[in-house]
Image (cartoon, rainbow, N blue to C red):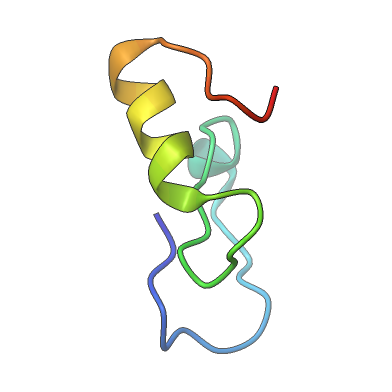
Length: 47
């Protein structure tokens, strides 16, 4: 999860790049819907 207040593009270490990230700085797609999808497995409305 990338939180608001983080500046610039992040260069993640190799072992973290295989995981999905949720960019909380972006409004679209809704980061909370992405988070819920990741936790519950329920696909959000926008897909």
